[in-house]
Image (cartoon, rainbow, N blue to C red; front, side, top):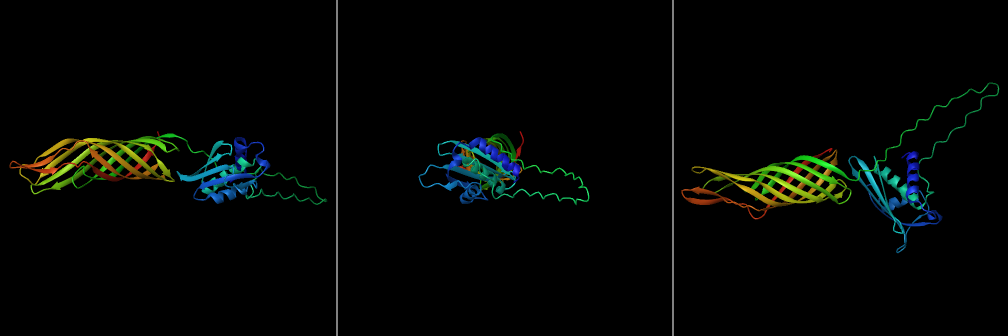
Length: 340
């Protein structure tokens, strides 16, 4: 991390959190850190390396609290430092960088400056010393040396992650259903979704999907091949995120057409009926980056319509299939985020 970046962080922290009198004595602090490259003790040592005024708070003592969270997202590491003063003030600072260590060091400097505006950057590499220009022999005039301008590399951009933004998704998946069709029905599903991404738990998403699932059953009178074609509308109001993993509870409804076709009997025939059901689903989602998401989901269907499909042979009827009061399903899907 370059010296210019550190100087900028020093100025920002001084403007946001420095108050008169904070640097006059030791400052009791409490630290909590959740990061792959740091924990509470390591982050406290990073703060202490930048200001000797920091010390661990005693039990029951008023203290400044630092909450550090660093997570990998979209190929970068994004960190958030929440500072709560002993007087109840609260401020948040966010930093992103290519490595977890860069984020941790940058926010440790911010934390140090929050309790000591004169905190240094000890532990970083010192500026290279400039060697004196040798004196030319007195017998000859000293040559004029023109120094080349120093090449200064630009510091890494410290972009703050977007707070809230609108998202659009498309995807495909495979699904297995038990109860909506006989036995274990297998089918495919196409999805489109839209939602609001937020750092908070409340990140509502609306999904519209269409699926075709088939199954069959056999009796002593013949075989019935059942096909369900239905659209599903679901809402997922919250998202619980831990690193690249997210858990989403969802609920909605299905509407479609359930049809059956008999075979293996005299005068085989077919029939169809409307299908309607309420849905409840839970999903575990993995986001590896590049706007992609892989989701494993499962849930229950509560059929509202439960029509009978029967075999009729020589005046005799035999039940071929009727949906149960509760059906289940599980599936795997892959979705991609589109830029709105």
